[in-house]
Length: 225
Ligand SMILES: Nc1ncnc2c1ncn2[C@@H]1O[C@H](COP(=O)(O)OP(=O)(O)OP(=O)(O)O)[C@@H](O)[C@H]1O
Ligand SMILES: [Mg+2]
Image (tube, rainbow, N blue to C red):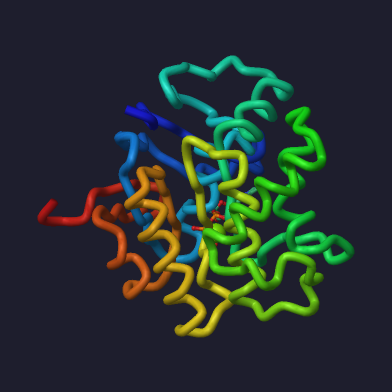
């Protein structure tokens, strides 16, 4: 089991400003699974993803990731888990405009004491995996949206993470570019990557073998599964 959420609660704010968002969320994901999480705007999808990715902590419940209960992990440890074990893909790519594609991809390796030549080699390998071997030295503003997202995926996988988290990875793309992203996810899944993807789009969610729904902060397995 790579992800185990037990009775997770999340409430933002304090006192009169309290906003309860997640309620008794339970979820288990095996290593190598590919799941999609769907739900309306404001239902708590990104909140859940932030907890899964150690960008935020739950207000209650237990989160075990990769065999460890990290409930008491401090900021530094959370950052290390994030950097070593989790790859992120966001709707808006989050690329550095003044760095070349391969430099963007190599960025997470800067924190890991990897030599420059090795960083470049691994970035190129990751860019090949997403079909961008001919765009290694391009800057983001010389790439299409779909290509930018593929650079972001290469950046997410170049550290060889245990988990790939994607929040609306096709949300900013047209359907053809979105299909290409989904093809890459299929390929990563077939290579054994664990993927948790958040999406509004049924056509995108349908590409994942397992689907979960979140509604008003309550998480449910797709009916019939
Ligand atoms: N930092 C915060 N402080 C207070 N409330 C917050 C905070 N972040 C999110 N919320 C609230 O939590 C709820 C869930 O937000 P979240 O971003 O998880 O939704 P979402 O399902 O990802 O929506 P979308 O599909 O629009 O991205 C919303 O009502 C939002 O206002
Ligand atoms: Mg969101």
